[in-house]
Image (cartoon, rainbow, N blue to C red; front, side, top):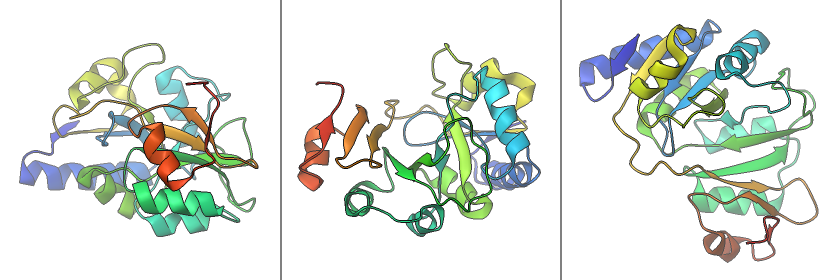
Length: 215
């Protein structure tokens, strides 16, 4: 079902429905500050599998995890590098995804790449309201693999149909540029994907950041 979150009453119903769906292991589509995402409870393996199936994606490409609070990050990682903390302080909530080593005690199965996780705290009130109730969610762009990323929930529904329980519509994404991805698992921070936050701004915070794309 699609809920128009631009209407206060529909927003409340939609957020409640999305939270219930995630807790029941079902899929939801929600707005973020980049593009719309399809999400599932990160700690429910069959829900993550349903997400990958809905997108037509294999386990070799684990979805990122979205969180609703900076403090949640401390519960996901064993040790957070100083560079990661500096970047989070500067750019969260926002369009920065960081790749870090997750705590080995976490009981989740996001895909075949074990030991690391891509994490982001989005800057969107609807997404944050859902995430603060559900906890960490596996979230990928709300589209079939190979198709354009959805910039409205209605576009996402056209592609994903009945595989998703609740669609939260908040209007077109104001700036549908993907998040910037920085890998912080090695000796030197690496820019894996250029995105909404430019390299220059990242280097203001982490001067030794390497652009592995060669840009």
